[in-house]
Image (cartoon, rainbow, N blue to C red; front, side, top):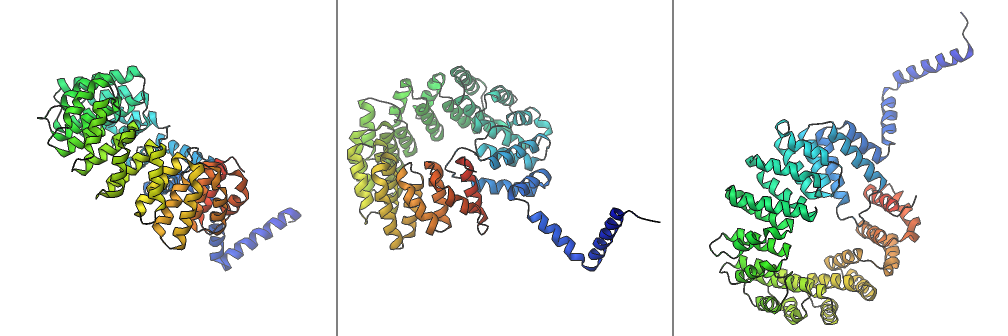
Amino acid sequence: MKYAPSTLVLGICLFGHCLFGVLFPGLDRAFAAEEGMSRSEDEQRLDTIRYGTETEIAALIQTLKSERTGTASAVQSKSEQTLDEALIGVTQNTRNQNILAGVLSFFGDQDKKGLEQRAIQAIEERDDEANETVLAAIDYLGKIKAPAALLPLERLLDAQEAGFMGAGFRALGRVASGGSAQDKDHTAEYLVDFYTNRTPPDANRRDILLALGETGSKSGVSLLSEIAANNQERGVLRMVALEGLAKVGDGAGLDAVLQALSSTDPNVRSTAVAALGPFSGKAVDDAILESFRDSYYRTRIGAAGAAGTRKLSAAIPYLQYRAERDEVPAVRDEAVKALGAIGNAQALAILERLFTERTTPERIRIGAAQMLLRNDPGVYTEKVIREMDDAQKTKRNSLYNGFLKALSETNTGKLEDLVRRLLSSGGVIEKSYALDMIVRNEFRSLAKEIRSMAADEKNTGLARKARNTLEHLGLE
């Protein structure tokens, strides 16, 4: 029998391949493994989403969370969008509680929309879902403030299933806070009715008041004021009511806040002081200033926060004293933040002195640098860079890293030279912060350096961040 030349060649090749496999059985597997390794990281991640177990997908989600935490840009890269779309696809076709709960939690933390209908379905068909999935769905809808969730959440609460009540109330308040004025008022009226007429368990009363404050509706002020001013009421409920009055910021609630300042419960007093921020008038100013004298440290923290919110210039001497001398570090921190929030010439002069004096505690110097950079990056960027370099030379690592982080959160073109230096001679941490500065300030002139980092296979995490930076900047 005669064979065509092409057939003969094919037969010889197949025989040779089989013989090679017999003589060298491990090499076939090695080539296959090498082929798998040649796939990009994004492709391997997509495979995990499509075909992975719940454990593998959970591990990937945890990795994605850590990569996206603290990113300097709210714009997603194409690879991030592709992975998120794949995760959305998985949730549409599975009832695996660990996968669903994991993806819902991840999207909620990222404030990422796309799972609204699946989350509502989990609530409405909760008898067919695991409790963990339903709770994750409730939490997700609250975090993204999905308007379509208002009625499903109310129906859930009307059923009064104990395991879902607390999460349901909290989510309802968040959703209403992102809705129209009509939605806010409707939700507030629903919550007031639930609190006063349905005798909710003590465990849920706090959640209802918390949600009522979240709505920001004036319809809830009367109930919140009644509880905030009631000396016979539990302290924890009074505190939540005071926080709610501050969120609404309606003048009708001011008297209740002022009454709470005389409470014998220091936690109620401190919450009342902090709640004064949105209100105005001489009585409010006097109450804030007097609260700086309170021996309970949380009251002084509340006073600093209220002074900063109201940009109360009269509080500057009190804030300076607290920033320099308070025995509680947290009070000193809040005093520095308040000075930055006020941000006038007097406040900035105090902050600059705290920053430049090297005998000042490191955390205060870092906090002062942050406030100076937020108020006037054009003036203070170079000064912070000089102090950062000095901290590196003197091996004060925590101070160095604190200044570096503060600079990475700053918007100014004066950072470009520092970024070049960090990219050329910095370590992994410095280069990561440099990429944050590039994205925040859109330093496209550094494209060559970013591409070089993106191609570096020695540090895959940094290379991935560099690739995402290129995408954020619209660079190929």
